[in-house]
Image (cartoon, rainbow, N blue to C red):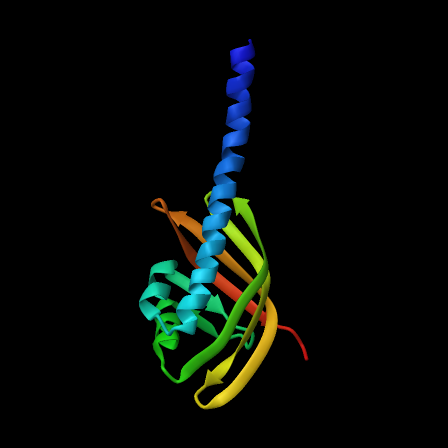
Length: 142
């Protein structure tokens, strides 16, 4: 009886331990994505995104993976700061939804920009590897 309770307890605890480990991995990948954009490191961003990735930006434009990777590679895009804060990971089976706030500042095609807002990134464990499948961000009104 005691052994059955321990086994049952482990069945209840193990998913939460795995989720906690994956949460730190997913937040680390969010931070890697920021660093990759800061360094115009398109190959690193390409590894983080699923093949059918889609991003919706604040203006309503959609970007697929190829467009997102190309925008990061574009040397006229020069971010000076990209910071995500208050990130929380919510799990739904093999899918994780990250919500948080962001601050970014830089130069794009010769024009300075600075903005703050909120984001939602959806990650999925695909063949044992977490990849971002969708991203959306909004800009905080000035």
